[in-house]
Image: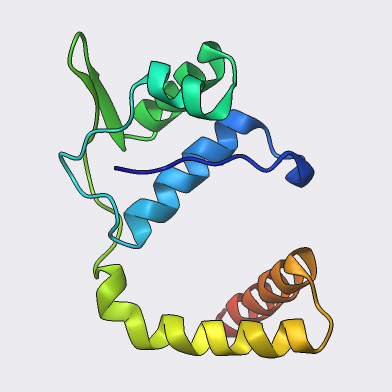
Length: 129
C-alpha cells in the first residue's frame, strides 16, 4: 500500500501532491491495477490534513481514470501506467543514487538537485523534438 507524505515547502497543493505520488507509484510499478488506496480516514490520521483534501485527490484520480471508488469498500487503482517494475530498474536507480551522492558532495541540496534534474529533463525533451 502506498504511504503518502506532504512537503509544505513545495508550494504544491496537498491534494495535488497525493495525485502526483499515486501517478509516480503507478509509473514505477509500485501500484498496479486492483490495488487499494488507503482510506480517507487513514490518510487523514497519518498526514493530519482535512478529509476534503484527500477526497479531492481521490476524485481527481477518478477523473484521470486512474482510480475508482467502490462505496463501502474503498478506492482502487483501475489501470497501470508503468511498463516495468521498480526492481527491473534497479541498476538505473543505483546509478541515480551514485549521481545524487556526487551532487550532495558538490554542495547541492534536495531542491537544487531537483531543479537540476528538471532542467536537464526539459532540455532532453526539447532535443528530442
